[in-house]
Length: 88
Image (tube, rainbow, N blue to C red; front, side):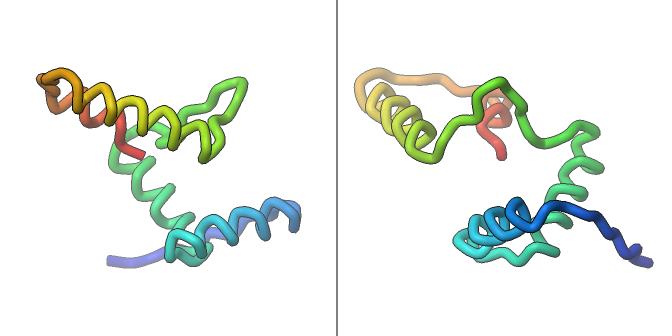
C-alpha cells in the first residue's frame, strides 16, 4: 500500500496542548492524526462530536461513573447500536 505525506499548519499552543494529551495516552502526533484520518475514512463521518460546550475530562468521568452506578442498580439490555454510540 502506498502512503502520502499530510502536512498542516496550526498555532503552537494548540499543538503543544494536544501533544500532551496524546502523550498521556501513549500516542505521538503522527499516530493521533493517522487515527483521526483512518476513522473518518472508514466510518464516512468525522469521528468527533462538536457541541457548544466541550465536556471536560472531569465531567466525562462523572457522567461515566453515574452510568456505571445506574448499571449496578438495574439490568440493561444493550444493542450493538447502543455500544457504537460510546465509541470515540
